[in-house]
Length: 88
Image (cartoon, rainbow, N blue to C red):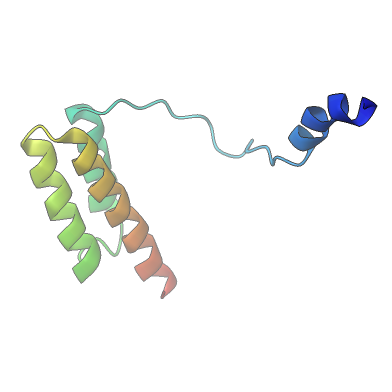
């Protein structure tokens, strides 16, 4: 029965702590869309087919007020650009 009380503490001990990256608080809005657009534009592989396509879709969605969907597309574009850069 004592093991039941120690379970949550031991479970937390295996969770990795991400001290390298600071916590970034974002909101689903035009400003964050613009931040992602700028980050994508600065990426060396932003003009590859998939990142460019996803980026254009994301910008279009954000421009039409569909921030969550636009942000999701822009994040996918950033991941695709990173994958292109790694050769994958």
